[in-house]
Image (cartoon, rainbow, N blue to C red; front, side, top):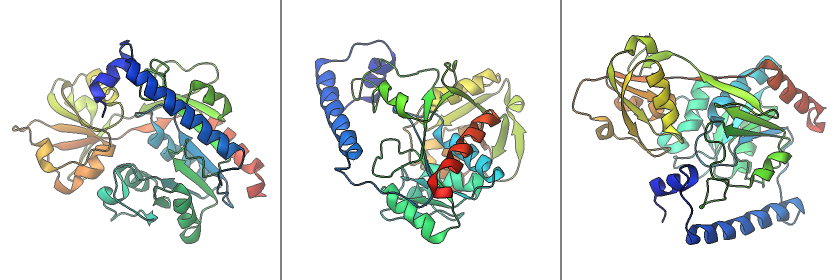
Length: 330
């Protein structure tokens, strides 16, 4: 219905939105406000879990770094004595019922992000389009005392105890308009009601927690061989990114002195081997999220570039303090 490139030019390129886009955005805003109001008044039912729930999300479309933050938060909560489990909608997957993720899970079924989170943390992970069903699945089958929802800030049916909004520090909120006239799922006023605002890239504002996605290790998809980004400096490579903001990945490679041929795929793209058949033997570098879907048909010169979220410890301490203050942990 809408051309993605044309929308990007409107959202972030300074091009004025058409009257049609503004009209649709107006309707979207009315429906969004009404829906949230109905939940706030209790006219739409909300599911309350017996353990604390943390929701990590954003108010804009596109990648902001939610999944690396989810992984980092799971690890930090474990260090602080909690037993976290993760729920996800399973974007890009075909699961129609609550499904537990394990080392044999097909990303085409459970989604690329859920599989990546499990591989990185080995924590209990469940996916379902109904986050409440995913949460109940974790509680029934896993030893979990806190649930972390990867995405779902607008999934108001699931009651939450802590809200974390991740902000793209470089693109911020684009033209500041609601979908589809702008990139926003909710107006920026929504930020006043979340517990933490985490800024990925750019310059964090005074009320935001800075996060950096760091890592210069490069790992072969076909085995345990490792290199660093510096080993590819001066080389020409094919760079593959099917994420919300692929330009961030390409810029990271260029900053390491790599000559990049860009291939930006749609977020959550379901790869086939033919997608990466570039007709030469140049190395192929991709994000870790893409790699979980390409491992089954990987070639020796295909590499993934893992990143980890780096935040100050006091952020994790503050999250843990909110959890301990919850009546569900007493």
